[in-house]
Image (cartoon, rainbow, N blue to C red; front, side, top):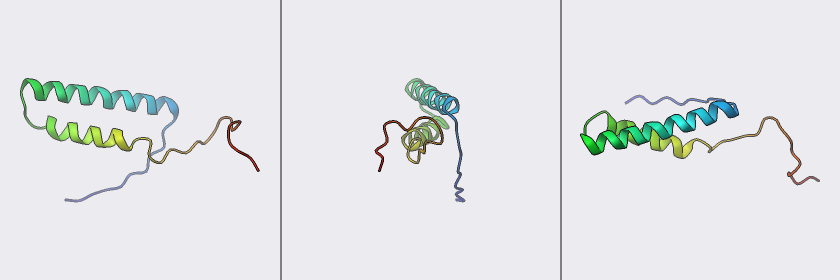
Length: 72
């Protein structure tokens, strides 16, 4: 199986939207699996949960205040 790596930059609004979309996807898959277990919902559920878990892994602040950062 071929694997790709992606680097993606998101602003705050896009991150909020992505988090909500993943939440909805997880809920939908869990509902479908409870009603009638079948593909592709098992695969989608696993992928959505894995992505949600990694979503904030490499977050870097690119703008805004730094009042609470410890200085020299």
